[in-house]
Length: 214
Image (tube, rainbow, N blue to C red; front, side, top):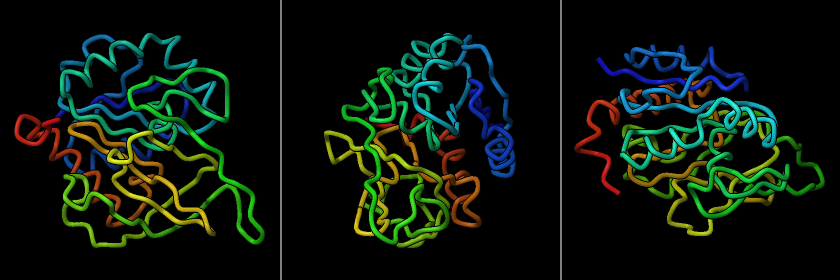
């Protein structure tokens, strides 16, 4: 069986993420201490809310270096929502530095007449890395569920695995490289195709030695 560590750092979104992973066939441990992350087949960093409190909670609970070490060791990682944004170097939402695992930052969605911010609800993905393992079995333009007012902007565009357009603004919706994947949308709340993505991540964790080349 595939064992997944669901990291609990007091930012919410644990219940739906746990249910999605269990539906995909994983054994899920909700982890509040950073010990032994390298003993899991995969790691999931969920979360809602603002950037500074989230990174402060993650650091105060001692997760920063163990997470970086586990990702460097090639353990499959999935960040969701704020769990994507924390991977970056900085955010316009706050003053705290991010984890710096991906060069670039977090930008604010710009006000636009007739366009709702936060970007909340269902929208189409455009898959810019259609061969990435997370998208296996997914149609070309799947509907997924978003709730956000900020988006990530990697310095290296080859990180971008999917984009989304809200009003006239096209932005990063997911990143991916090797074993590191992260989504701005919530796959666990995105119906059939979102749950297929969660299944794909669990399959990545099961086959990490084969799939996670960097």
